[in-house]
Structures are given as C-alpha cells and as structure tokens.
Image (cartoon, rainbow, N blue to C red; front, top):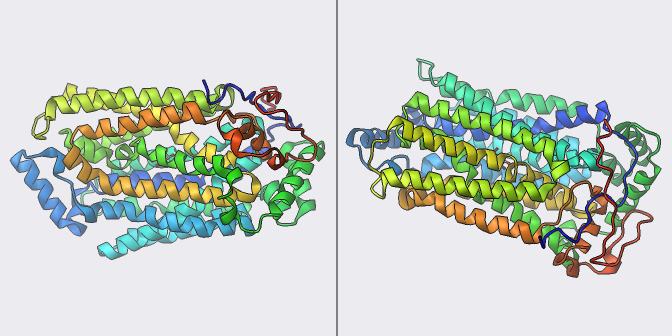
Length: 530
Ligand code: BGC
C-alpha cells in the first residue's frame, strides 16, 4: 500500500543493549500516569447516571429523566443537559491549557517533574470533588483534575518512548494506554459498588477515590530516573551516559550516546520550538500531531467510555445492568489493549490501524442498524433483553477494535515521530488536540444523540472510513526505527519526502541518507533482547 511500501522499516542502527529490569520497572511506574486519566474517563459516566448525584447537583436533569421513564417518551433525549455535560467535559478544557505549560516543565525541568506535578494536582482535584457541596466545587475540582491529566499525558508518552530500546518502544509505550484502560475498568467497578450504597453518598466515594491513582503516580515519579535524552538536553552529559549504560544494560553505548548528543546539539540550534514546528520540514510531524488525536476522538470511543451506563439505560437496561455493562466494556478494553502490546513491534503500527479501523466500522454499522430498527426516529420502544444483549456484543467488538488500534497508537505514534527539538511542543499539540476533541464530543454527544438518533453511529462510522484511508496512504511504518532517526522514514515516504530537503536529514554522527525512494535502512533483527 502506498503509505509504507517504499520504507524498509527498522532502525538505521540496531543499538546494542537489552531490556533491563531497570528500564522495565521505570516504564511501568511512569505508565501509571495513565491511571489518573483512565480513572477519570471511567468515573464520570457512572456518577452522572446515579440518581442521588443528579438529585443533588442537577435536579432538572433528574426530573426530565423520571418524566421520560414515566411517559415512555423519546429515549434519545432524556439526558440532554449542557450543564451535566459541562461536568464531564470541563476537565478536558483544563487539560488542554495545562499541556502547554507542561511542555516547558517537561523540557526545562525534565519529564519526571511534569509527572509529579500531574499527580499532585490531580490529588487536590480528587479531594475537592469528594467533598463537593455545589456544582461550582464540583467543576473547580474537575479543572484541577484536568491540569493533572494535561501534565501526565504530556510527559508520560514521551518518557516511555525515550527510555525504551527502539525494538520494544511500541510495547513499552503502550503500557501508558494499558494503564488508562485499567483506570477506566477500576472506575467502572467502583461505580458499580458505590451505586449500591444506601445513603446516597456513593458518588462521593467514587470521586474521592481518584486520590489513589494520583498518589501512585506522584510518589512513583519521585523515584523515576530521567531519560538520557532529557539529561543530555539539560547539560548533564555525564549523568546521561551513566543512565544510558544503566537503561541499556551494557557499557557499549557510545554510538547511541553520540547520536543522542548530536540530536541534542541540533535541537539547541532551535530557540523557538513553537515557531519552529511550523517550518516546512516538520510538516509531516505537525500533520500527524494534529490528525492522530483528532481522528482518535472521532472514532466515537468516548461516547462509549463516558456514556456507556447512560447509553445502556437508553437501551432499556435497569440501573444495575447498565453499570454492569460498562464493566463488561471496560474488561474488553483492558484485554484487547494487551493484544496490541504483544503485536505492535512485530506487526507494526499500520496493520493494527487498518485492521482496527475495519472492525470498528463494521460494528458501528451493525449497532446503528440494530438501534435504528427498534427505536426508529421516534425513540420510543421497549427492547427485548436478548436484542439489547446483541447490541452490547457489537459494542464490545467495537471497543476491542479501538483498543488494539487507535487507543494505544493514538498516543504511541505522536510520541515517537518528533525530533528532539520539537518533541515537547509537538506532544503538547497532540495532547491539546486530543483534549479539545474529547471536550467537543463529550459536550456534543447528548444533544447529538437527541437529534441524530441512531444515525449518530453512522456519523462516527464515516469518520472511521476517512481515518483508515488516511493511515493507509499517509502514515509510514515506524516500528523498530530509533527515535532520533525517524527523519529517514519521512524522507523515504512517497508523499512526505518532498517536504524534507536532503540537507535537513542529519541523523546522529555517521548515518548516510540513502537516495530517496530507495531507502535501504536495514530492519532491526526483531529479536527481543530480554
Ligand atoms: C483515549 C481516550 C479514551 C481511551 C479509551 C485513550 O487512548 O485518548 O479518549 O477514552 O483511550 O481506552
């Protein structure tokens, strides 16, 4: 296929070294930064479907919901409240703004301090939310949570991609997404339990327990070593060399070290990463920094993640069964993500994207069709149990398709394609586009469901067609390529090659750029050096 055929993927160099316990452990600790994001995604949907929570903070929504139940009226519209969705989505606006500040902290102070800042702010947000007395406290708490997410999502993926040996970068980086899914699942399970609390304060427990993942990443970050790339960049060259030996588990790191220094020196020539990223030679990276998170959200995944309980209630499930169904989709999400952990460095990114895209599309067509057949445009129907179970089955298959494609790759690919000089800035763009689109979808879903009805699933399906074609034609394969050599992949690409002049291609100290289109970069040996 046009997108990747000419690129003989794999590293220009296969640096010596193996996966050390040290690096594995550091990556697991850093990946726990994903827990806070995941916990939050999973908790809001369940909490906003709890009656005591609605009665306390959003009484109008509660009345509307009861009314709809009594009158058997339009199911599509019963939850439509902008204030309620503001509760969910305020976090994403805060994360968006925070990620720009995080870029500076990540670059100047190192990746670990950004993670620490993320954990601590999230902790404060959890406290405020657990103790909330009114909507204002609730939303302020969510803003703090959002700042925490902005910092963590900015620093963790970059940290993981820099620490990992090229051959295992996909696997280690997806640890982040795996933690996101575990966070979502834990939140779903907690909601399932707290919804049963008789006194009507279960939602407080759900919101306050966000303190647990926050404490894990905040404390964990204190013990994390910084990446060699970041140490070199901040002038700690001796520490960087020592760290590189330690993370690669060998003394034979001179070549990689020289390449990292060269990358850092080149990055020093760039005094304005924000302005710089607009240069023509960074056009491919900038395009993907925006397109990947944009498309990731337009898969429609967060309709399921945020609103699964609401959606299942709409299908006519009882309260308990709705929360249970959210637990089921959460489980599927966790297991399907681990499929990508074991396949991403072997199959590569493109195959997962393409397969996942097709699977999601088929499921969206089926789910939209099934809901449409029963509810039609009026939104009035009673759905038999088996029928609803069938819908849930296809929703699960859709979640699985996402979980081994756009979920993990939506974070992995942006974190591995930027050269050092624009890496922090590029990652911030990715985080902020992701958060912005998440905000828009969270805010727009309920009114859209009310207006588009079952056609909403076809709307997201159309986007999935577009993004799958985009990947097919424009995304080169990046598996196994050392992160500081990625420019070779762009240069060799049938379309992006034209944006990069030969003199823009500097890779480490001694790699020659082969003639474009005939890139003979040798593949890494693909063996796991564990
Ligand atoms: C996305 C989230 C989504 C989650 C689901 C993440 O990669 O950024 O928006 O809710 O995956 O697992």
